[in-house]
Image (cartoon, rainbow, N blue to C red; front, side, top):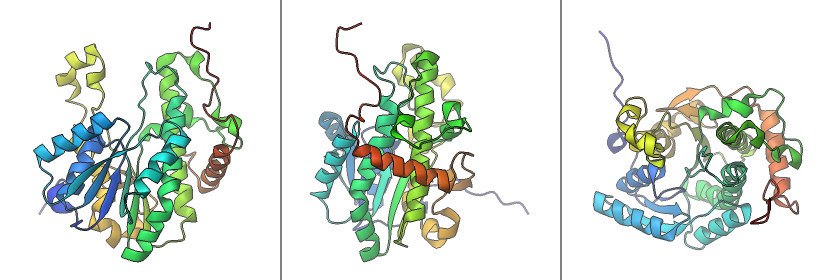
Length: 326
């Protein structure tokens, strides 16, 4: 009489990926690590993006010990801390591959008040990720045309509806709109404000690129991993409280499931209208986007962002004091 939907299982609910090539940023830890693992287990050759060669190669070794089945994992340097580094990272990957079936933009700076320059959160999460995506976009388009499908998956969050990002008057009409200084809010609040705006901009870019996409087999999808504990090991007090924290937050592996659904579930292809261009909460559930994410405002934000790449002195976003100066 009653039926209960079975939970998502990456072992049974993803399609076979033999012969396909995937690239996952932030693949050396957390959600990205487990995304790499399960894509490889389904047969893909997965390029694991990491800024640190040491951490990236250690992650590849750990994954091989854990078991990646019939797939393959390859370290590739990926630094999207600045647009220039992001472009260089993308070009380095392009020199190694001739197809790209799956791109998962999983890497990001968290809302960490310990960061020396809090505006790096927007510079990295939005501008760096966008430049990387635009660098890889031609190969994604080519792959979708030649092999029948390619997917660009953005890992974002509900933070795009919170803090500074929920301001109904927020706009991105000029480069100055990205250069706002929130440090007077206090480090904790300012860090989350920058993070929220970075996630808003990421989602807006996703919406605008989907709207402008002329390749019917290139699928843009945004995934919210949910409430994931990827941070409790960062502070002494949260390490002590980890058992309690884990009662309310899922593990990084479970947090990867929504990204995996977007990247490799056959349901996405079979029900394109339901999923493509949408924002999905765990697992595979279409959710409304924040009020600020309209197509018109998203396209305006994307145009302004692209113009910023060529603007002299645009990066870093806020002025930097010389070391030792007051």
